[in-house]
Length: 155
Image 1 (tube, helix red, strand yellow):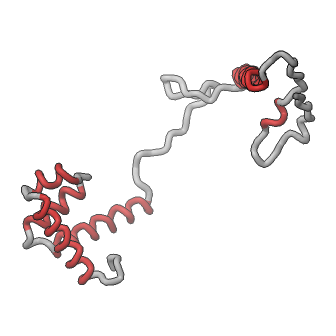
Image 2: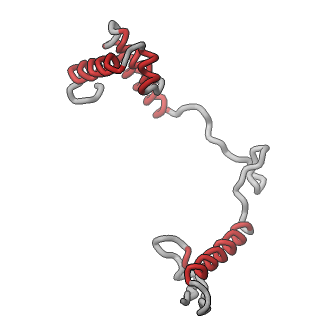
Image 3: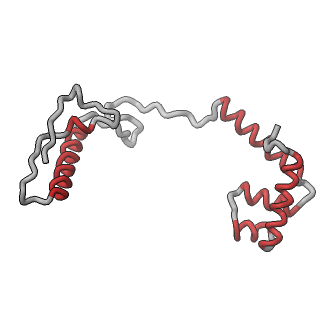
């Protein structure tokens, strides 16, 4: 089995730059082909790791500076205008849903459980109902929401 060496200029392919690392290697007759391929791949990976170690590190030190000494520009934790609008819309949607089921205590408990990520046994325990009762409450919620929003989305 033989691999051909390619020049760096023709090395870039649609699947990456891996072909630049292929070298000519002949598989001895008394060696299993799979073992030869595995060792060749290990060798290529080792050479690539050594080459990458010589490059500039992009890791961040404990004091917040990059390896080159520049200070890292961290994004602020404040939400931008788009994130604020999305959060406001989510609050509006949740308040509209809660207004619909304000009188139905079991539906409100199921909605709160869903909002907290509860499912199955945890949701049944939180809403204090058995499986049949939970199924009935979910059916009521779906029926009311379908009647209220037939196109499936909030205005």
